Image 1 (cartoon, rainbow, N blue to C red):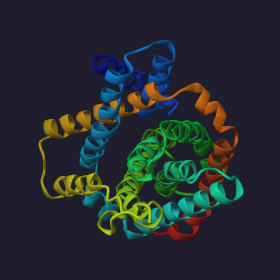
Image 2 (cartoon, helix red, strand yellow):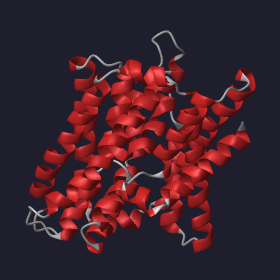
Image 3 (cartoon, rainbow, N blue to C red):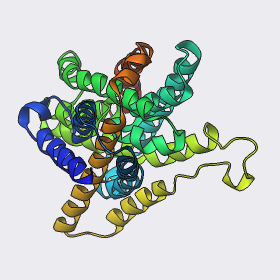
Image 4 (cartoon, one colour):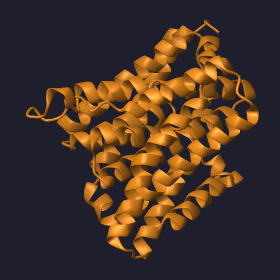
Length: 327
């Protein structure tokens, strides 16, 4: 099973490099989930042996991938783009998370797990954020798959819509790049949307997006402390499911900020992170069943659509108000 998962993960990474697929903003993570889903639908395997391997990939390798992903970031990137962008990203994340969880649970009557995963995927960084939140939210595999699927759909749409919007605005490429980075779902989609406008727009989009990724750590900790405590009868010392791997993520970013690592080492760390996360997504896809996704119905799609509009329209207004004439 492990050999098959590795093969599928590598295929997903390679497929994501194809210009046509890259132009769609589909990163290796959603591609891996799709390949795993197809593999799980057409094959049979030993339940016990497969479960051990799949759980190892989905849990242990996921945490390792999130930690290593921190080497993509540095505190210097935040300082270069300014404190207003950090504040802007924080407001976007808090707003989308609050709206998504409230509307998902109260209006659409979704389980809190699906509403939270969909909201964090829209608010922070798509599939990677959903996978990082899964251990804290303690959601079912099908809940994770539904959240990833809906977020990927609207994140892909955003990549095509933002360049069109740019032609009807008077914003500088740098400011519009920050708008892209602060509101588009996936890192790959932010890169693609910014690149469609200009090199300057892409640069600012990437940094603004990576700041959102860095804010994933406090978001996961806040979810654990505020919404997903252990049951009331549990030991008080274990009430909060502390996601220790998040501190590893922060430590990796700190190391990358304080030490100039050789380019070869950075590339190796980034590749390792990509492979670990892709393996985790592949395992998720294998464990997911089409029937579970169909049973979810239209409500998760409706929630993702609402959050997409909030990011598109509300994000534009917030960017215009906070950043106009500051760069």
